Amino acid sequence: MTRPLDGITVVALEHAIAAPLCTRQLADLGARVIKVERPGSGDFARAYDTRVNGMSSHFVWTNRSKESLTLDLKHPEALAALRQLLAQTDVLVQNLAPGAAARLGLSYAALQADHPRLIVCDISGYGADGPYRDKKAYDLLIQSEAGFLSVTGSPDAPAKAGNSVADIAAGMYAYSSILAALLQRGKTGQGAHIDLSMLEALGEWMGYPMYYAYQGAAPPPRAGAAHASIYPYGPFATGDGGSVMLGLQNEREWQLFCTLVLQDAQCASDPRFDTNARRSEHRAALQAIIEQAFASLGSAQVMARLDQAQIANARVNDMAGLWAHPQLAARGRWQDVPTPAGQVPALLPPGRNNRFDYRMDPVPAVGQHTEAILRALGHDTGSLARLRAQAAI
Image (cartoon, rainbow, N blue to C red):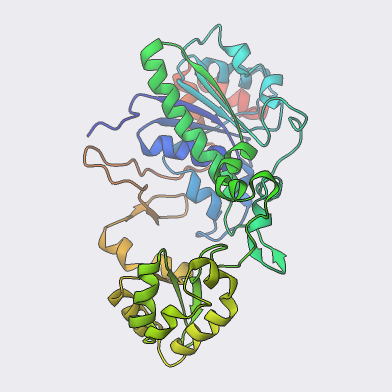
C-alpha cells in the first residue's frame, strides 16, 4: 500500500523529545527521515536512561523508522554535505539551541532562495522573537511558564505531569503544521517557515483553565486526580485495597449512581448533593458516603455496578496494567520493532487506516546510515576515511 508521505524526505537536526516525536510521526506515514546526530554520542536523549535492553526509553519511543547520519556541523565539509542533502529535502525540522541553526546558515531566510519548495520547521521554547527568545527551555520549565503546574497536583502542592507534556504538545503541533504546509505546497508550489514554540503549544492546551479564570476569576483548584469542578469525578478507594476512577456528567447519571451504585436512592435528593455545584461544594461529605458504600466491595464489584448504571469508569492502571491492557491486545495494537539491542514491542500509531499500514521500521544505531547517505551524495571511500579521521562524521 502507498503511504501518505511516501517520497517525502525530512532532515531533522533534533534532540530530546519535541522534534523527534514530530519526525517519528512523519516517518510513521512513510516519510524518509534522516536524523542528523553528533559523531560518537549522538542525540543526548540516547543517554537519558538504559531501561529498554540498555537503551533509552525516550529514544526508543521517538526514533523508530529513521536513518542516523552523524555530522559535526562545525566542520566545513560536514556542513557542506548537509547542504547537499538539503537540495533533495522536502522538510527541515530543527530544535537546536536558540539561534544555532541561523548561525550555521540554516535558517529559512538563508535557505529559501536556493530551496523555494523547502518547508522549515523551527521548534523552540518561546519562539523566534519576543523578550524570551533566547531563554533555554526544558519541558518542566514550560509546564511552569504555561501555568500547567498551577492547576495540577494536590491542594497542598503543585505537581508536574508524569510525562513530557510540553514537548509532546510542541511535537504534535509541529507534526500537524508540517502536514498542513505540505498540503499548501501542493497548491502553491512554495515552501514555508513554521515558527513553533513550546509555550504556545502548551498554552493552547491550557484553554479551559484560562477561560475558567477569565477576567481575574478564581482559577480551577488543584484537585489531585479528581476533577476540579465536577463531582464525583475521580478515584475512589474500594474494599479490596484498590481504586476505581469514575465520572458523572449530568443529573440523570447522579440519580442512577445513587440508586444502582450506592443503593441509596434518597441520597439523590439530599439538598447538599442535588446539583453538581452543591456536590462539588460538599465533596468531602459525599466522598465519605461513597467510600463507605464501596468499603464492602471489591474493585470488580464496584465497576460492575457502575457498568450496570452506565456510569463511566476505569481501572487506575500502572504501567504494567497498560502493557497488559486487554483492549490494546484485542485490537492488535502492538508490533515488534527492531533496535540495536533486539526486538521491542511498540504501540501502533493511533488512528487505524484501512488504506495503508504505518511504517514501523528499526530504531537506528548512532551513525548507522552515515556512509550510505554520504556515498549517495558522491563521497568515496577515501573521502569518508578522511572525514572520520577528522571526527567530522
